[in-house]
Image 1: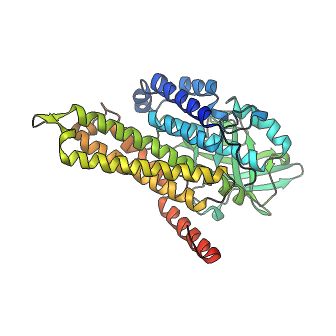
Image 2: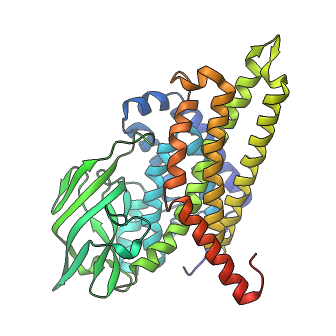
Image 3: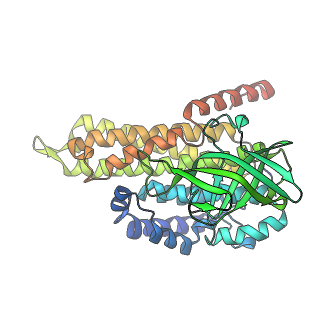
Length: 390
């Protein structure tokens, strides 16, 4: 991707992140458990996020956004995930769709869509996966056939977060030239034109935000909605997925931090054998390992964001951050449950929610098995080019 993000002043970054932290404490933590349990879309919270400008954090000020850098964005994502991981899904897929426009859209496309995305008036989704094409993006079968000044789209898309309630879908489809990217406008709801939400996907965690399968039957979009050049969509979207992986890492850090904080607080309150369990060496060893992994995950995520914001290639760094942070979230949520004992297994405390939410980050934006392959190939390529992999 060309054009690095404009660096954000460190003090501004701290103020933004602290504002989101206060918002989470006041508006999210008191209601997250009930909304998650009933799988209810958090409309009031989303309205609050809109008022804070969180749907336009990285969108340039010229297009109505806050114009902040990727480091600020991952700070915001971590705070939202700390409160309720599902909120980050509502923002992240929107951000990736906007990023695709920011880096590859025409001036007209940016002027048309970025302001309404920055305000949250229209929320975006990114639609790449299909029932038979997940990590293997070259296997996409959804087709867009040129018909005069329009493209006619047919196919099925899977695992679309925000798919039903979004107004804009950044869609990957196969054209005569190869995989191309389109911005598809739709009305929020179960159907719009030739688009139908075929089913809602039930999930272990990540509740309150819709994940759907979408069917396109002779759905027409203007040729002007093609993003960039025909046949370049795969490369464009894979570049955006680097940001998606960094965001996944930030989400994982937020969940891991929530799990650690819960464990630390409980360990100081729970008394066994006449003293708080935090004074037992076995618990202290767990807390030490948890804190160390959490800090390492945060630093890997920060490093990847810094490289991406500087316009440097970061496929290896983004993969490392996503891999390590997501595995950390999974491990820390289990360790927190162990420290809580039986209480951690009940839904009276949020620990079991952390444990159900954490696996999404291991799987999302490319499984961790895929991340290991990406990392290894990147290291080998760097070693062949310069003699040093890192």
